[in-house]
Length: 127
Image 1: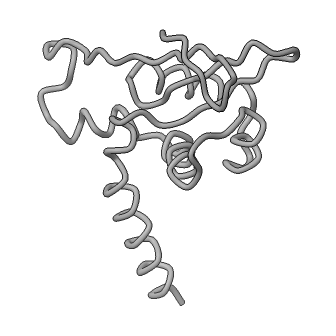
Image 2 (image 1 turned 30 degrees about the horizontal axis):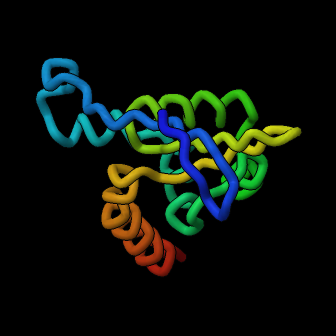
């Protein structure tokens, strides 16, 4: 957690920069990746955060689509714990909270882009 400023506005950033212990990860690297990003919702959250520098909760909920507040909150917390998402809290009334991808989350860009390309090709081949 760090207190910083953006455009003269103070905020507190919540992020997990510590990687889990190796023994707490699956032995297979593919399984590790799937565990972190394997749900439909997490992939869509990352897609939308890759397309935007940061999003507020409601903006993210609208852009992801048919996701409940509870499911979005749960996924964002898990992704924050995994070090993929950072949460910025601005001391305003009402509080303003923005979500963005960490450097670790940003490093998944080639995977998401490859999925996009594959999906386009699959859709084009569909009849």
